[in-house]
Length: 191
Image (cartoon, rainbow, N blue to C red; front, side, top):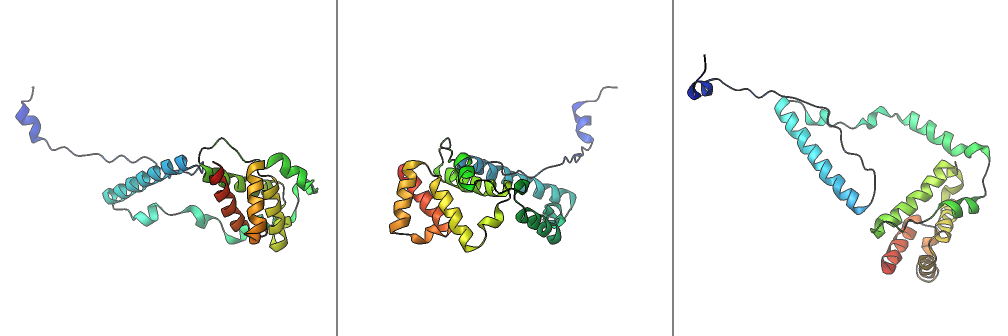
């Protein structure tokens, strides 16, 4: 028996809750554009989780809990010490040659800050992947790392940074944070 329009309205409608697994967005690139997009995705994720918790009555803190507590201090310490104590393949490579071949500033990114950050990150990655962390620890190691970072810069940038470091900021020869700021400033001047 067909229903009239009035009869259809008399039946109550119930929204059915459907939950899908919602994963937090990951930072996969450090350029300005990618980070801007990540912020938007992260805010959307937080709003989705807030709405889900309001509807279901779940505690938002427990739903959005970090997975960091799954890593114990002992596990992290053991892993770091194993990595630091050994050179890759138990052989010390030619350090100068290794960095000259692999530590290159990418000029493809339009964001200068991202380009410089990626360069410093690449240096850390080379150190880590080759088991060289012990060589660059302590104050003497920081000086060595700063020297390598300076020597592998593109020529024009290298000239400007060395001039600045030699005559204005000699602390940048042994302080990676200060060197990072100098390289960023000089890279912006060139770009």
